[in-house]
Length: 350
Image (tube, rainbow, N blue to C red):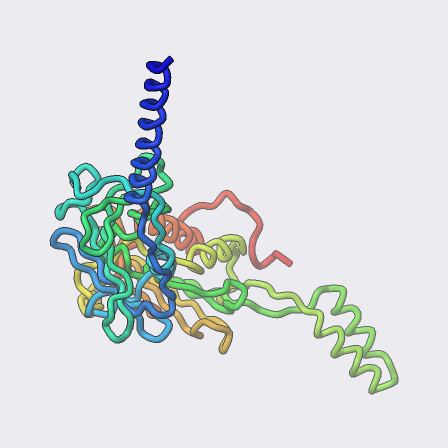
């Protein structure tokens, strides 16, 4: 009996020791608190990976990339700001161990420093690879070598070069505000404009109102009839065309983005070059986009992409082959250089 009591006492002692040590172990592995940062307080984001060093700076409500102050992609900046401001840790993975397996070694890690407008550091951390869960990212905080699970899969938000962070917008306008479009390709030119016209029904109503002897009522009827107009695309030379082709071209250009930018920031090199096509777009005044916009597309480069310049972008850009081919195809169709299976002519469309 004494032996049984002794064995029971040993088991109890072992269990107690385990519970004490387990509790200490859990306390030891408690993740540190990461204070939240206000997005509006972040004025600079420094991104360092190997020899690559990128700076993004806030200027009023806009973000700029590098000392050349290229406009930054707002969506990509917003994603980074959300990660920085709301960074949270869920688990401690390793204590000062092998950082290479987590891609947190100097060669592979991405160093992030967020500062306020006074240069004070608000957040400093290192990004490693995406965790096997695909819902976490391996990180280290400040200059500590402890590796943590950070909530979220966000390495790709920061693992970009300067060109990736730049705003790729070439043209942006509302299609229903455009009143005129002119296309040129070599000696071939055509101009299309949006004309207001009365429907046949309202023309009849206006004619009937003209016979009314009551001048006041006649005037009111005429104004009412004329206010019920429709907008119709017409060609300046009165030639046949498909209205859908004009709308398709405008749709292609309305939110046009480039795939990248050229190495040279100056448009001067294009002054002596002959473009493949030039498109002039005129919109309404005071509705959010400029009244006159011009885009010029040049011959393919060795990669099959199209260099171009635009009045709405300060820098020469590169259109991917897909976008460039689409635009040129629509231009050719409208100029009559390419047969179109559509048969409904624009001048006949109501």
